[in-house]
Image 1: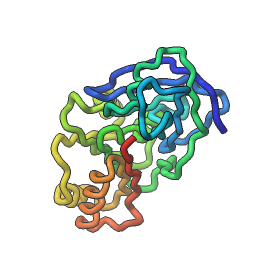
Image 2 (image 1 turned 60 degrees about the horizontal axis):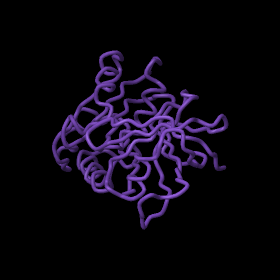
Image 3 (image 1 turned 90 degrees about the horizontal axis):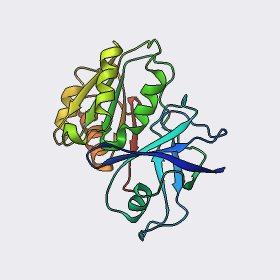
Image 4 (image 1 turned 90 degrees about the vertical axis):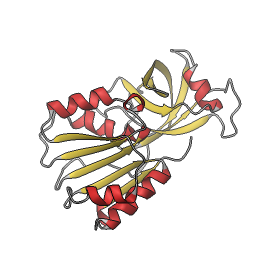
Length: 226
């Protein structure tokens, strides 16, 4: 199903990272971890990949007013056009899809590993469940080049102070398999969720395997270039 909606807000949420908010159609449904396809009516700057892209939804499923997506500005014609599309202009979104569904009931500890805008599905989940009573702890390992490039960092830090079962660990260095192999020693019984650029996901998974984490405890969502 395709919905016509409008842009309601633009915001830079970190250095070089933008958030676009859309009015949420009443029939648009999604679960934390899913993505949507966003299409612009036309491009102001040419783009060989066309006028639509897929984005993980960064807002809570409980937010019935807005749908939020976040992305790094790469200079593509699509992103250039989207950033400069005026508030109130119409765009199209397809119904949410995807099988990367974050758990609603926690039966064991969870470790979220986010690289850059890979934070999107985790923000959706945390905003939905931050006020709940969690049966198990959740740890976010958040990788960025610097604090200035980390989207939603202040909000995540506040969440970690307010919720005793949620902890945030920032990583400001290039990830290596050895880094994640070492981290597995702290989270031997956890389920791992890994989202980010394909190279980062591969490095993380290799490290988890080196640390003895079995494949059935690792869920991944590589973000291809868009």
